[in-house]
Image (cartoon, rainbow, N blue to C red; front, top):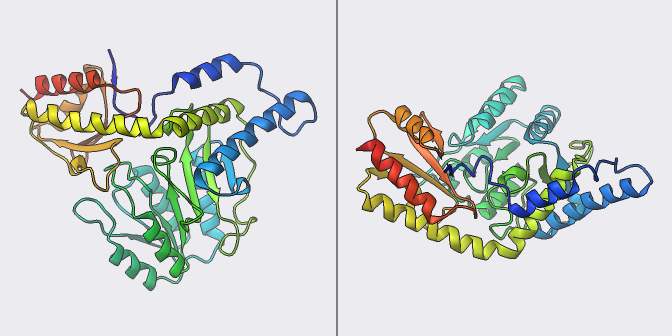
Length: 345
């Protein structure tokens, strides 16, 4: 039996999503721009998905756009940074390595300063340092995720958005690990660009949803694009978000119990570990960063995989990320701890 604890990278697909995709195979292929029934159906499915996302974020559907994947989003951000009068990019080092490499390349290519905001011991953002960086820069592009995909730490998103607004910075926030799970009212939070990926919320791959606050800071011509028409992915996104809308409280309660049980079992097994994510305060229960003290970390991760336990390893820091989905069970944790105990003993 495979134990899948890598839901931060790609969450297990909901059974209802599988049913939707298999049930509509071959029936939703028309171009949304054509004037016949199949094209109208495609357009309707896209608009339904747009409205659901807009309602969750409490924004206008006109501000919700759909891309094919994250690489298109990065391309759009790169173009935006190239032709706009930015002087710096602000992010932090405890971030997805792909995103860090992207910002390094963009900063070098456009002669922008790249700043890494300091983090506290629990990986929270140092707001005083962020304020200092914003004050010292003429105009900054700030990119910080709502939930850190390495540590699970929650961002003080409203406070960050207020600072960015005060100092005329553009604030991009990845909400992949919070949309549907946490209440996120963007009508009261000054995020300029928010993005999320369908495969991180229980839908299939193929959609990156984007909220863009067009207006004073962002002109439509600065960030515009041809929208995604992958109706299977968009339809699966609609199904997944409806499930979160109906069951988020139930799922969140269940995941909190799984997190508590995980640490109880690790302690019972006398496994030597450290974790900043053990706290219930300021951390998402879905993502748990753990450093298990072993002499050969790479061998430890390799043996986990050989024993059909799939996690995200961070080899540089010798940490693993366990990320839950609503499909995980207490039996999964029992199996994980059993394998860990066998490996470290």
